[in-house]
Image (cartoon, rainbow, N blue to C red; front, side):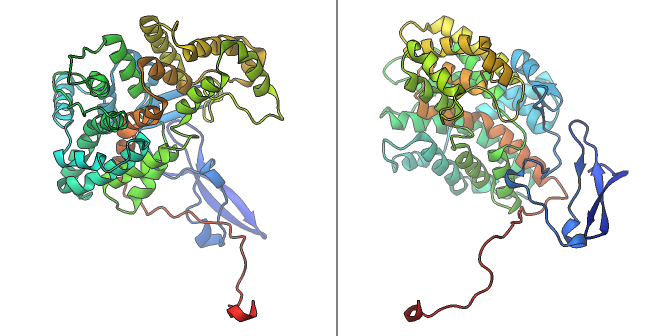
Length: 431
């Protein structure tokens, strides 16, 4: 952590305490309250941790007011336009963009790790066919530690590296298998001659009966979805991974915890909720009715896929994703898909409506990624698993960074206790 030359003064009951102030390379200053309880006997109270920094990090920076997202200093729009997912993975993991030779070695390593242990196939068959693919993924990823004992020692740098590569490589295979299992089709094995996104699409949509050729426009759109969701700083699932990791849990258990947290509709389920909202609207003619409901303070209905908790202006990822959505819809057409017709009309109205402009409720990344995945033929139940595939590298990068931090302690938030105070047990006949 940076050396502090400034302090903040906090006065409690006439006694003043000096708290160090640290300045980051970007973003607001932070007041260090680490020794506050030891010195003053008080805690701070911050439900949701919205005003609390829990770690030092050099991976991702977000400025929500300006609509900025940077990985290792590189703006997300440049990475999405000029780079591709595995190069961004390398950047997140190692801190710098790779040379051509480094990238080739990294891509080969990931490609050679995409198959999963054959016995893991039996795990899938233990689930009901109608199980949500996220339920399957939480179980299977958690079980990886039972199959890959040689990469669970978090004190061994080489084992941490192998676990990182395995998770990035195998997550698309596991997600595709969860999908295939849910629709009663045979698993499709990965192929080493395909890139990351093309391989994933083939594992999801190919069948043994015929050859499947991946359309490069769809592969590029899929790669962009992966890239734009790769990391997003200290969000709920990333914080979950860090908290699990702080106890010394193995990497597979930590990532399974992240997947479980991501499952929540307020987090990774947002693009699924967006498509479900489009289904609820049902027809473009009903859009004005739902927009009126969204403006009505007394109506609990909210337009999903518009605005963002962090980005108070526009979501920088949405600008790039809109381009992909337009390319995919041009390729596949919207004529026969009423949901996509509703989405396009809703987008048109929202970006021109004074209410939405004033409230800065712009279409976000979930809105566009949901449209793309729907157009590609994915059911909504697969949206969050695809998010989990994308975010795996972010979780691992944050996990690696935390394990290398000499200041790491086991996570242990405090509480403002509002329950009963000490009382004596009453025998049952006297109650």
